Image (tube, rainbow over all chains, first blue to last red; front, side, top):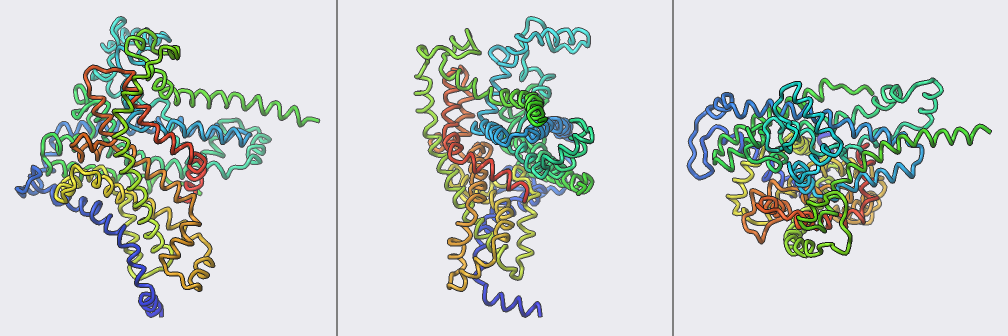
Length: 315
Length: 281
């Protein structure tokens, strides 16, 4: 019965297939074909031209002994831990805005949050590069002005980091030891408008009466967060986690622009994506770059799977 | 009687929250402030007083003249890419979403899975073979390459959101339209598009922003200076040896102007749309 019904439908509505064809063609050509091509070419030594040589798993074997690539995975793991911390201000801000009693102010703050988005992402990045400048930069200026610089110098003295000296401007992007801290600091206080708005959307279902009831029960601000707000935004936190993992693990635009194609001094900012980009477009090793791309893809897939499977959301 | 007292304590209670929020937002706006005030200084003024704006009498307007001359052609290219890309991308996505939302035809489940699987596939990882594909299609060093890649990249997310939305539209509307003999295309234009204005607007802004901010694709695709989009243009500006910070900041500001215009008209839509869309998604 169902089969005949759908056949009837098919005869009547077959023209509808033309509606999906354009997007399907676009996706096949510009997403599926490159993906297939990446798998295929990861087994070749290929400089991008017509000649290529089948070398089996050599690219992957090379990858597992490639010290730069191995280090880059360590770096990107550190960056992922950073990004967990960087998510917290957005959550805090969303909760604070939601707890405001006036709807008017809530709206005003939402709009103010969106305002920095008018700056193109790249400009934001370059402004931070300018902030990091040792002589003119804002960051060193703030550290000098607030006296935090002398604290850093004192800490350096006790722990023998050999990084901060009293009369030398701090070279945030030129000292190998400071590359990772700079990658952490950049974008402070890490408020993402999209993130905050998504968290706020999750919080929307909590009415003021819930807060009043909690207050009658004598639950403090931290208790409210743990018992009322956190459970409701777990879905959103998980969503942001997936987005962060994919963006951090596959991303390299930040490192490319803030540092250079070698990940800055000492290669301390080298991430897998950047190494893939470097191998393809600076060394012309397209086959090897495809293999690195495949490895990154597998990592993203596994991490997304773990996140969806084990970071459970209780409804 | 106790009501006014309670309200007063509420207000005082909220003030600490206001302070916290304002603190965050002020730091977040600080780069904007720096960009604006440095854009009116030459290097000497900037080094003498980096923090405070100089007096309007001594503003170096020529920085802005330089910036406009440099950035306007880039903006024109970027507007072409982002607008063409967004319009085409959304039109195709609406058609696709309509296909999935209105009828369960044989094979639509499979096609849906094919689209969803792409959500797991990070675009950046594909950049090497994508570059070779564009090369063999003779699309390197053209703006159309960016448009096409942009359209393809936007399909999955837009179709995903729009499908849910179209499925929630009242069935009666479509049935009434069918009674009147409306074809599917007419239903799309007369029922779907008028009914889904806000969600299409939100998706359009997201897609526009994505293409506007992209610099990795343009960086490998474009060679000629006349074709540069904002991303590549700014990267070249950053690569100059002697940096006139005033000129550079003015250029950054000019680069933001189109987005300022877009946001002025769509702020409400954006804030509402994103908050509402996130619940469903």
